[in-house]
Image (cartoon, rainbow over all chains, first blue to last red; front, side):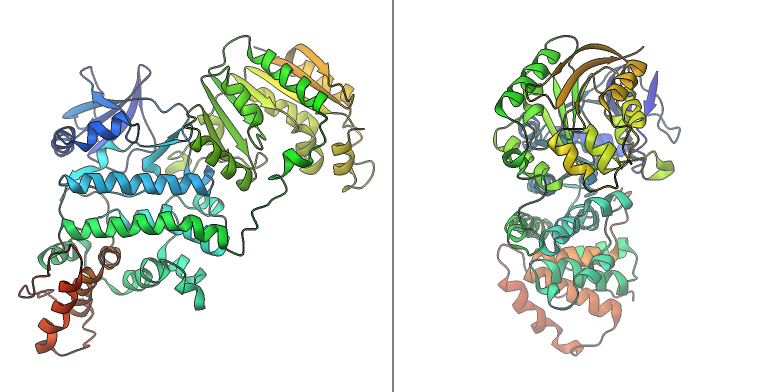
Length: 470
Length: 72
């Protein structure tokens, strides 16, 4: 039983499929030649050993024909990425880390006579906080300019620049277009004096003009550039300058007017309403819940600063920490990355509007719920936000939690909880009369087997460990 | 040579520009030949770009004798 990865059809010379739980990649004759070159380089074993390129070996078993009906010349096996995530779910520091890694891999390849045939953010995945380059089919013997430059701009450099220079979040833009932001779209955003921000003139303004004016076929331009002296040295210089630019965008982001370094949630830990006793009891309950059963993957919904994700990581193989607030997740990523933490994957996503399927037939990039199938789901200090702030009916919230399957640790703040009162104060009286503990417990009993529950010492919140009914 | 991706003609030249001064010279020649913008006279071409090429650190000088875009 094998199936092709729907996001892997664009390159006719290489396609990823799964068979018998393994992640395999078929290569055409051309691509197999490039694989031989790649495996003979110095950088490939070095960067796979460090985890910067996905670990890959030759697969000797059977393989299905390519999606185009051709037999493969060679089949490779990749190490499985625990949880697949996409650039529209990454905070700034993650996309920037992905861009830096992509350029570093390119630079290493250029040093040994290879190049990359594309430059998309989808070439990178994260194992916890470690970015890893996954598109082994992208390496090719080449001496010309980097053909992936446009894709790199559209899916990584431009998104980073609009966030860094203009304070515009790129996640909705990348989610809206699988090919990313075009040079002409971005040029419109950098009008007037904004075009003098770092890297904009060459990569955006001039780029968009050239895209519009140069109508010669790409292959002709490529050979002209080569015959005009465009050597590997110049491709290296391009890569080096891009690396310098991408690394500098960090500073630009900190100084930009759109970024005040604070958000509603970034100071949550300092201002939240938990007493020390409540926090301790809650931590003990979560630890206890995770000490039983299979904790392969824990999903922490509304993870905030990742406190409970890190507790979960003590007991789980992998943790996905999701929050709708980019700044808290960005901060969490930086902390995880600095600590070399590879179990916790931090992602930005509005839980009321999760990532759907995008690209060809809406299948090229899978919806979040298809990629993340947790054994345990944490929904701490979340239900009141979904119900009262986002108007999701309580029965819907409970059915949604049940849809993740497995065990769920869910916290229900009572109607007299200070945070619930605060949220209710923003809504007309009487709208949320069904927000009651007994109603919540009846819904839990409908979908789950309740294993145990505990009211926190403060008396205004109850936490439950439940298991989805088979 | 086996590229599946259209890198985009304008993007290829833009990537050369990002590469630095010498690349900018190459790209400008390319653009002039392709667009027939007509800045500068033909006989000035050699001196116009050789200075650029020499000024680029670590980059080989562009081959001034190579005709660029002769098919346009």
